[in-house]
Length: 212
Image (cartoon, rainbow, N blue to C red; front, side, top):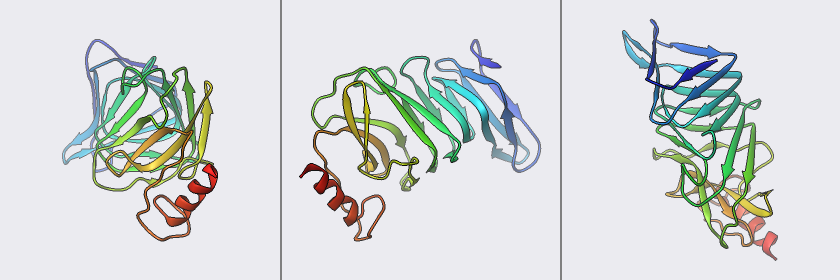
């Protein structure tokens, strides 16, 4: 178990691809920073979450490869990743929705890098959202699109938790964020004429049919 509580933790390794793998639990307290990298040359490393639970509300200066479980916050909270976020098929992302504000009302990953998704998304909701209300669970701060989807959750599919139904969007927010939208109505933006995938004409047709 690693607890980053009273200060920040920096792990510096030599080489061009530094990695850090933990098989226990990592907890980062609010405003604390976990940095993984190499000072010679100066590169960001990769934090491997393997068979591990990672939770907290701090800042990670590293790429994150999630093949375990990530729980932002100890209750709703926000984890900022200054690097790429990659979730493997075995990875689990647990998100809470208890209100309307990111970081305090609902969980959020703030990713300053590329986002690649697979694996499981679990949503625990105790909030009653307004019709069409949105919750940006992954704030993808770069201009690149989200790659992949959570397993069994293609664009526009629904998740039910705590008496509410949410539709998942992978090209929402400012166009490349992962958003849960209160799902009593279905809306999607067409960005291509493909027969499948985020922003496709097929996704819009499926969305319309679900409201019919």
